[in-house]
Length: 232
Image (tube, rainbow, N blue to C red; front, side, top):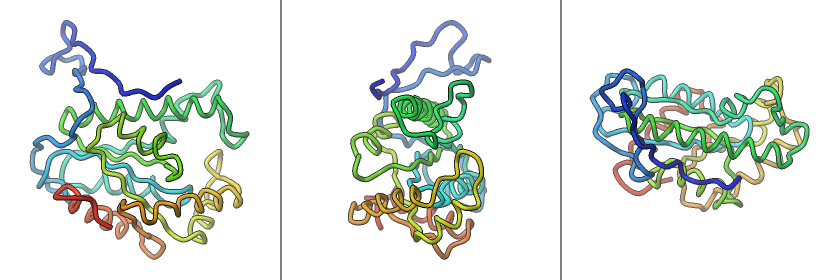
């Protein structure tokens, strides 16, 4: 399965924006900001159009919780898209990475990523911002970060959430089911994530931040980035 950008479907009868089918023609990947109505949430969102954020982090970094909180408290419509949630839509035949990473789990990961990208573009085309969370490794930029930008568009804003190892180990220990990893695997993933230092991407160390404070830090990064080049 080769990652590719989802093409724009041709609208059929009753599929235009004025119909009641809920179907909208999607544009090809491109800049992701368009005008949006004002909002009144506690975080930003009213001053600029829809944005697409990719929140990167290791297992236990808190990215799903923070992404959901950020989306809940913005001042304009915002969706949260969790890659793990979408990957687990597969029930029968689910390739659990805990049983060993193989071509089946890799294929389901790629399929989930394309599905998330399609959903993000659909939200953006209809004036809704979105935040996607995923563990993207810096040593595979063409597959991870490059893949996401192909699926969503070049205007995608990546932000790295990178707390200390002791923090991710503690949070991972509180997990259950197939999302709980071994300490060795968590340490390995966390070590690979450290490669984002020096990349130029915004990095948030949320070791000492609760969820609202981490979401506020993310909001400041997003607000500054939509006005110019990404900042640390």
